[in-house]
Length: 194
Image (tube, rainbow, N blue to C red; front, top):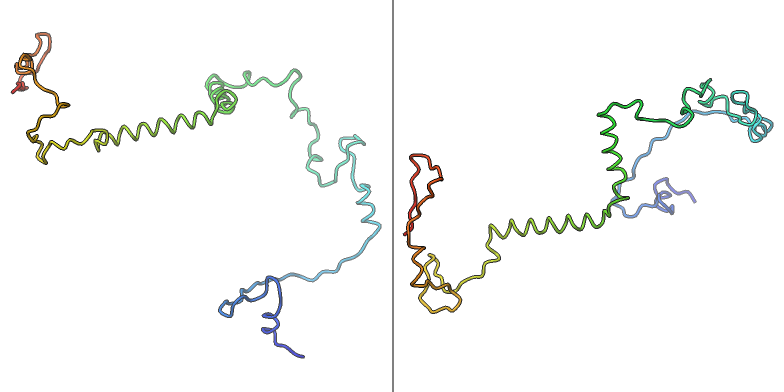
């Protein structure tokens, strides 16, 4: 039974199976060159046993491939730390030492501070800040007074919570007199009380 190439493609299972008739097949371009593989069991056995490795720096216990980068290093003593350890303070300037100390503080900060606790504290501070900023603009914390009209004047009613002016408080009616030690520039008008 001869089937066409497109019909065979639709019948195949797996990732090449076409799911619906509307999809276009995606093209894939693959190219290469022909080559012959030669099976060399002796060479494979030699590589598997490590006989192709050479001793590094005359040390027969440490063997490397001839293409290993360590073969280019003739003397490692210049890259090794001095006896007694490496002291950065002898090489760095004062400014570099300060920068290193700041970097170390940042590097090891989580050992001394609980970062989870700090993040929760920061979130709470931001919430309080936003709440304070919002309350200044929207007056959400001020209770609504039903005794006020739209223009700001109060409707006459006896409210026990409203502050009452006592007849004896004459201080509020007096005009503001600036203290003598207050220097007020000329040309600035003083506002008096009503």
